[in-house]
Every structure is written in C-alpha cells, then in structure tokens.
Image (cartoon, rainbow, N blue to C red; front, side, top):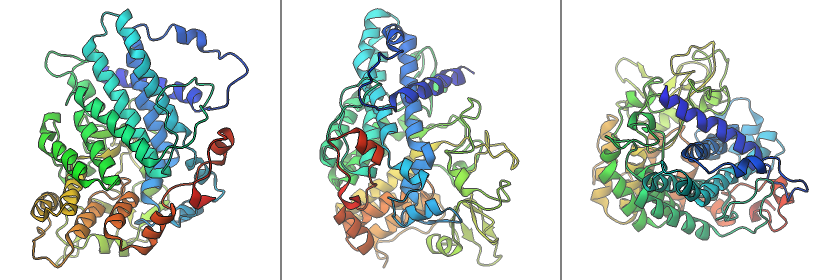
Length: 505
C-alpha cells in the first residue's frame, strides 16, 4: 500500500498541473489564483516528492492522450489496419491535415511542454527545499534533479521524432503564458537532450532504496520499475544517437546498457513473461523496467481509453465485436515466417496456432492480444477497463539497437552475436554469416517481430530507410519533411513566431 500511496501523488499532482500548464495562453490579464498557494510550496520534502511524481504523471498524459504513442509509432505505413475507423485510416495514409478531432488533437504539442515545464520548474526550485528542510539530503536532490533532467530530455526527443524542429525552452515559464519563441533545429534540440542525459546519468542510481539507503523513506520494492535510472538515461542516449545516424555514439551508449543491465535487475524476458497480463512486461507487477509509464488499476489509473487494448482487442477477449485496428493474416504470415517462433507460429504437422501475440487467428479478424491487461490483468471481458504499462523501451529492444549499430559500423560478427541473443530467446534458428538475407534487414525484421504494438514500427522504417536508401516512399518523405506531423493550428495561432512545417503548408 505504501507503493500505491506514493504513486497516487503522481496521478493527483500530474492531473492538476496538466490542467494549468497546458492552457498555454498568452499572458493573462488577471493575477493567477494559485500564486498564493505556490508561494507556500517548495518548502519541504513532501513538496519535492509531489512535484517529482507530478512530472511522471504529465509524461503519461503527454504520451497516451488519444492513444498518441501507438498512433504516432504504429499507424503510418505500419502493420496495423483500421477496421472501420476513418480517422485512423487517414493517419495510416499520412493524410495528417484531415479534420478529424483525434488527428487535430495529435498535432498539438502543448501537453509535452506541460511535462517539460514541470521538469524545468523542479530543476530550478528543488534547491530551495534543501535550504529549508534538513530531511531533504544532497543525495536525494541529486537523484531528483537528475530524473527531472532525463524526463525533460525524453520529452524533447519524443517531440523531435514527431515534429522535427520544435521550440527549445530551457527555463520554466508561468502557467498562464506560453513563451513565444521560434523553433530550434533538430540538431540543437537533440544536442541539448543529449547533454542533459549525460549530466543526469552521472547522478542517477541503477536502483532506488537499495539496502539501508531508503529513498523518500521507502525501500526498493516501492520504486522498482517506476523511476528513471542510469540504464534509462543511457538507453535514451543510444536512441538519440541512432536517430541522428551517429552510430559510433549509439554503439557506446547501447553497449553500456548491455554491459550493466543486471545492476538494475533486468534480464531478457521469455515470451511468457512478456504477454502474461498479471505478471508480465505490461502488467501491474513490480518487474524492473528501463522506461515504463505505468497505469495502475489499484490507483484508479486504469481506463477504457489511452491504452492500446482499447484499439486492438475485440471478441472473444472483450465484448466489443470488432477491434479498431488489427494485423491481417497475410501480414502475420509474412512477418512471423518461422514455425518455431514462440511469439507466433503454426505447427507444420498439427496445424495448431501458437497464440502468444495473436488470438482468433482463424476467425474473421485476428486479434492482436500481446498486450491485454484488463483491469489488474485478472479482469474479464465484461469489464473493458485497461491497466497496461506503456513500455517505451526494454532490454530486448536495446540489444537489437546495439546489433543495428554494430552492423552499420561494419562489425558484422558482433551484430550477429546480439541479433542471435534475441533469436535464441524466441526459439528461432540463428542467423549465420553465410546467410543470403541482408543482415541489417534481418535485424530490423527481428525488431518488427519482437516490438510489434510497442510504438516502434514507424521510427524503425525511417532509420532503416536513412541507412539503406531503398524505400522510395519513406525516403521521399524524409527528403521533403513528410515524416513529421503538422503543427496544430491552435499552437500556430498562439505563437506568432512559428510557421507550419514545410511539407504541410
């Protein structure tokens, strides 16, 4: 219960801060009604804890609003097909200036700046608490500020992948206003994010509350799998480098994760431990994570929206007749081409279907059921309330990223070694150096299988196209800026210094 009480603060503070921080209006003509209460904040250790947890709550709101993480990462030219949702179909076809409310909402970046502003405010004001409350130690402030830096860097990286150039705000601003600044280049924003993560990585621990050194009075069982740690920072650094095609850096950062992941209690998961709804990767267990944004049923965070299950599940798993999106049988058979694959395969003798990633394969529409956390994972089809974690990255994903970096750098044997770590864990035959399959293509094919439904497919297609330059559709979008989303008309109206992204003018 202590764990739940700590995390409840994240929900309550995060939601309250979101309401005020996302208004982003020009300067208000009236004095904010919360100025008096704010003057009393930043005085005790309870304030730092509440505001830190609030940052996590705002990160969750930013990423899951209107299914953003999955629509941004899976829908454009991806493996999922809309069943009857016209708004999702226009995203699939890259028609992102359509008037559908969901599409218009996803062009608005203000919810990300709410999280960024909360992190900046924390970095600026946490030292005040140390001067006022002797219980707030230098170690705790170091941990807290490092988390805020890493969270802010994560939000900037997340936005760059969606919009390309975005305004770079390094300082906090009043909740009643949004600073009118122009966009900064991708390189500038990502350089800032990298610098922040490197600073954070120096101060972040591998785990919190270990042994006799509690964190906010709690031991590790309260914080495991919840907070940003040193492995998180290096994982994000690896992705920032790979996105920029800086594979020497990506190699170094990803290798750090692979060499040190046991210090954070991580290990390569079996498929059973990925898909188990109560004790698996996406479930409510206290499993160590690299970066998970949690939504606990026990804390009242489980909802019928904002989870991938709301889009992908249908009868017989829930009472909904058809899913909003599905993976066609042709795509399943094309992607999962080895009968021994423990994620999905069809036994060549018995014809039995392995159903870890899919249910109802032989029915009218296959159901993507890899992620199916109903309530706390033990719910039934009559209660379509979902409590799954948003997993941004995990160890298997970083190992495949390291294989990618090794192959781009010409270290073929090393690339094969890391690729085969995942193949072996999934019951597949190892890749051999004499194979006729292109090694880099096979690494990305393995990412496609392993990470389906986790928000990587669109970004993986971009990275592969940048390297291979063999995908005319994606390469043309890269060249013209079409890989990015348009900027919300409302955002443009409130900031006179901004211009619409070139492709969408």
